[in-house]
Amino acid sequence: MDHYSLRQRVIDMQREPSEATAGRAAEDVTNTSRENVFLFVSNLIGYARIILTVVSLYFMPVHPRRCSAIYVVSCLLDALDGWAARRFNQGTKFGAVLDMVTDRCTTTCLLVFLATAMPRWAMLFQLLISLDLASHYMHMYATLSMGGSGQSHKQVDSKRSWLLHLYYTNKIVLFTLCAMNELFFVALYLLAFTEQESQLSGDQMKTIVQSEPWSAGAMEIARANKIQSSIPTALVRLSVFPMLIKQYINVQQLIVASQWLAEGDTAKRARQSITE
Image (cartoon, rainbow, N blue to C red; front, side):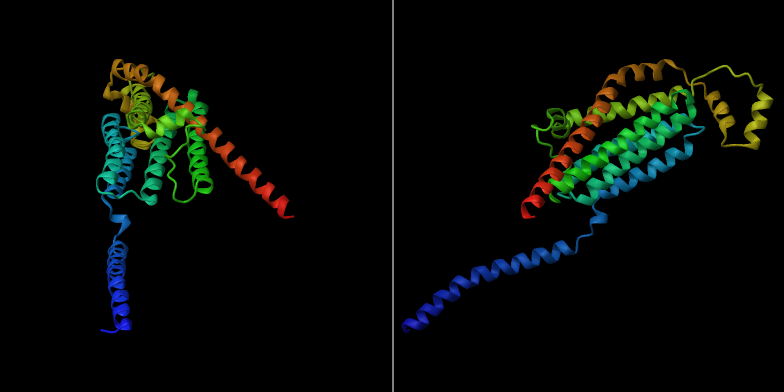
């Protein structure tokens, strides 16, 4: 074998592993491209949450027990879909957005009902809805635009906010605050159906409900379920402090996200002034 043939053989031997590696990589890409993100287990759980939320809304005006049970199951599935995403390595941007949007919509629907059931506190519920939507949107947008498309909204630098960092990195803190926040509003919902004396007679209430089955008159009949106020009141007292912490975290999200976006705007304007 001459010198040229020996050299060519060495080159071929070096090329074979790289070609094999490239082939395996191409095969992995092909298999990945066949995956349907919409059918990931974690996302299927997310769809189930949406269905349960819609069912709970159907029962919300007149069946507090059914509504509360279904609503709580939907909220508990929020923790299960995150576990499934980690267990099956199915964490996706779509899943993260689906999870956050479902959380926001679910809580908003409950607060809208509370605003109608407790008109005296309607403005407070409206402000809570606005804070929840604004803070999470600003936080998500700031993370995607400033941190890059590959950064998760749960990756918060402790230098920006130690509280947000703790909230998003400690699963126990995250689950406890979110669960207690939802528990507080569910307890308020149950309080709206506690037994109260009505100035309407039974026949008058029956006439109202028959003419307008989904009106406020139906709520009067729903109170005939005779939910005792002791348990909902105890749940409100148990969860009020964590709920307030959760609202403070929402305020922190709004402030930190606004500051982050403003820093990006300032840096961008500085670069533009240099180029000009």
